[in-house]
Amino acid sequence: MEFVIRGEQKIAAREYDVVVCGGGTGGVIAAVAAARGGARTAVIESKGYVGGIAAEGGCGLHSSYNLWKAFPGVEKRQVVRGIPEEFIQRLTQAGGASGHNETIMRFDYDSDTLCVDVEIYKYIALQMLREEGVDVLLNTMAVDVVMDGENVNCVITESHQGCEAVKAKVFIDATGYGDLCARAGASYTEPNDYMVANSMGIAGINIDKYYSFLKDNGALIEYGRGPRSGRTNQIIRVDGDWSIISPELDQQVKGLGMHTVTTTLHDDYLMFIKLNFQMPASPTNRDALAEAEYELRDRQQKALKLLKNTIPGASDAFISRSGPCIAIRRARCISCEYDLSNEEIINATHFDDDVFSYGFHDWAPMFQIKGGKTYGFPYRAMVVKGLANLFATGMMVTSDKNAHMSTRNTISCMAQGQAAGTAAALCVQKEIKNIRDLKYGILHDALKQGNVWFDAEVSYRQ
Image 1 (cartoon, rainbow, N blue to C red):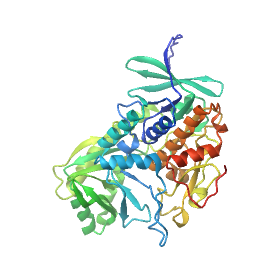
Image 2: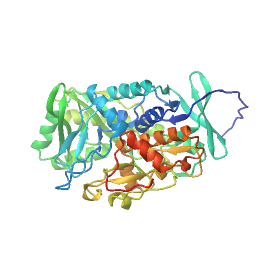
Image 3: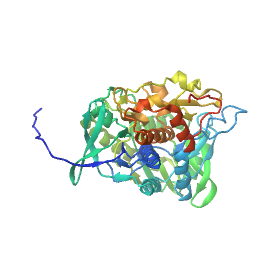
Image 4: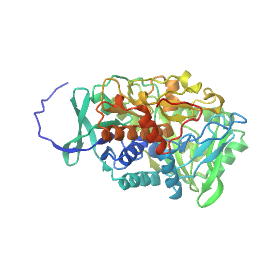
């Protein structure tokens, strides 16, 4: 490889209290929380919109509640509230979400299903940031950092207007890839233990016909009802086991890495059909990622053909949207002061520095939080080892893949965002130089004031 030497540059700088790198699912909530805590806040996002995985690669939002339906006699509780629930309510009122609806049939996996319109999601997320006075630096890449000992001094950005330095007292890495942490010198691994994905929206397919197709073939395993195209009690989520229909069809589906679950808020439109691919290298590898981008778009075309030939009345279906780029489930795994284990999660363990309670596992029913209870996510699990003013949130924390299948979920990322944003603002307000020195009692009280719900059975350290 050839190298060039880049000379010293004089770079224009702007300064904030809190900077969030990544305007995705959790980053939006983190920025809102920090701004509400009185911090002058900016969010840096490489795309021209915010919303991240929830607006690109997911299949709706769910898991705000405990898994009550799988455990007879267990009380139904909404365990994630606060800013995430406020966002969901605003999204629902704007016609961009179905609201909370109970899952039918496959309730041992999740008791709650919530479908979203991805375009309205992007709009409401951006609207909330603007209302809170957050500077939203869109179409901007965070490409490097300047360090001052164990402190991140500033992030170096590149945009169409050139290079700029963005300084802050506290930083939150919500990039998904862990780019900020890596550039700051944090310790990390790259497990490459998940498939990457791209999802597409398909117009011209009726979800009622898809539901009937699965049901008539004895292959229906899950569905949900809610509002659709202005009517209530409509099918909005469906999943099936295609191996029951035909071994040949099942082989095609698996060969494409196609998820058969889909959601919608509109007639004759499936909002999410997800295609998956196992990369031979970590998603941080640019060239391997480029090959994967092509592979997934090729799979989308083949999946569309399969659906057109299989689902009744779908012969004129077409791809109406796709993710702008690959969606990942994990790239770098950042070393934090605490690493949750799967045993702690399924055994409903709480800690003396919980920042929220959670009750969902993406590998249920193989793993469930016992008794329909919750586990606690500790503050330490977001504090990056060896660095004084940097939080890591979302899919870049939790090394054990089994445990990660809970903590990486979108609602968990949102809750982590509120916790990190609130803590960052408190550190600025109280002039705390090392985020480890923030007294938990102060953080707990601030989160409670922000309507974060904590399991009442747990006695917290003040």
